[in-house]
Amino acid sequence: MTDSDHDLLLVPVRSGPQGCVSVRLCRCPDGRRTAVAFTSAAALERALGRGEPRVRISLAALRSGLAEVGVHQVQVDPPVVLTHGSVHRVAS
Image (cartoon, rainbow, N blue to C red; front, side, top):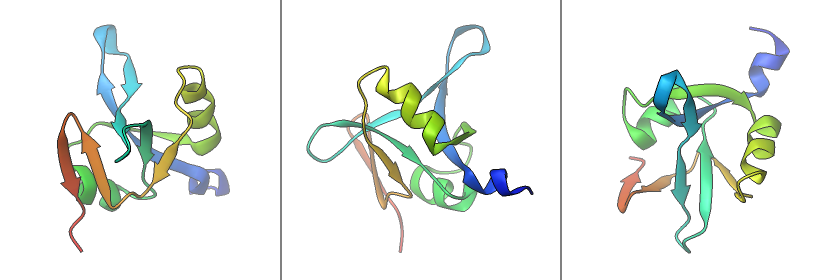
């Protein structure tokens, strides 16, 4: 693992047409759109379950891409994830 590998986060994605993917957006408790990112596969799986599609990307690249669609918040290793009206709580 190189030093730059340590700067990469795991970000949940959705599959799109013709093999493309998009970042899976969530909602903050106040309703704002946000992206979530995780520092480890274990953290992602605790929050969203096994088998969640993901990509490795730097925080800077993630923020840059999200800004283009008006999303300005990224939560890293969130304890609760809101998706499509459901709440995924991380077990303690």
